[in-house]
Length: 231
Image 1: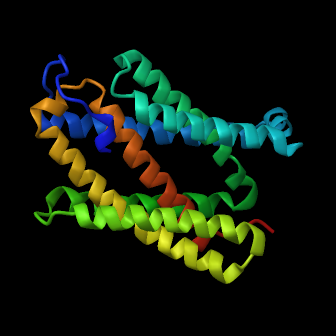
Image 2 (image 1 turned 180 degrees about the vertical axis):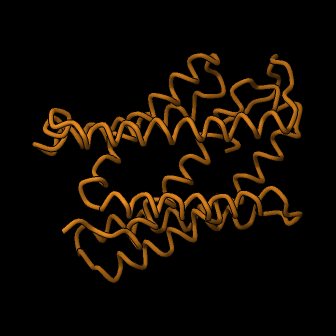
């Protein structure tokens, strides 16, 4: 998350509690928007046909999703506050559209159960990250290396189709994103205490995007592991 920030912003400094409250508010907003977009596709025959009659629309959405997160990661620090909000909401909508597929694969009750399971795990790790006095930087670095590893393993598994490897990737992925959650929350706390950084009005949105990605990835990995598929 260091790449988001530059010294010398001219915005009034935000206090730590304000940064954290706004970060979690934007996280909540992003999750609600994504969930609403996904459920809207599931309940609309027109949208379902538009997205799933061929591979092209979903491929375009996934490319747009990746492009948005890369662009936002590089530009959120310099965007105006209204544009930062628009970018975050746009990413939440696109991600929700791509997530709509889970409603066709898993039972609704199972999705809800896993969502609350994710919220519990995420909340626990956020609490640990916020309250611990242990420096989690090393854990964060290990998790980032591990993330690269499971991305490579996932790409390889696309060709070999091993269910055993897929299970290993899923379990390791859960561990990695749980670790990243604690690490990212600790970094957010440190950023919020640094006047040179928390003077950036976009800080809560920047932080929300980071932990939004943690939350969604934990959710998808847990859903893959515990979700009950439709018959």
